[in-house]
Image 1 (cartoon, rainbow, N blue to C red):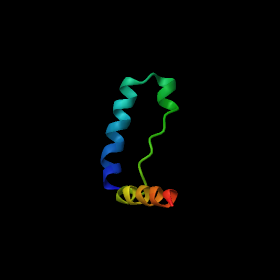
Image 2 (image 1 turned 30 degrees about the vertical axis):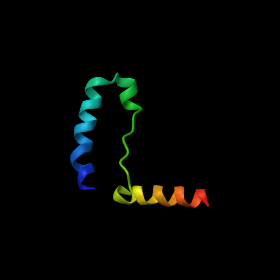
Image 3 (image 1 turned 180 degrees about the vertical axis):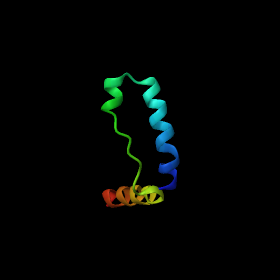
Image 4 (image 1 turned 45 degrees about the horizontal axis):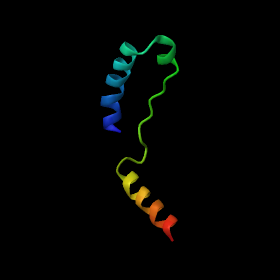
Amino acid sequence: MAQEKFLKPKIDKALKEVLIERVYKNTNIEFAKRQNDAGMLGALYNFLNKI
């Protein structure tokens, strides 16, 4: 979550500068909740679907 606290304001500021207002207001930035587990979950998903 530390990365989100650091990156979200920077990304938000950059998007506000380059997007038109209507698009910016309807844009929602979400950060991954699984973080390092995402790769393992993807591998498990592929393994289970090949059986």
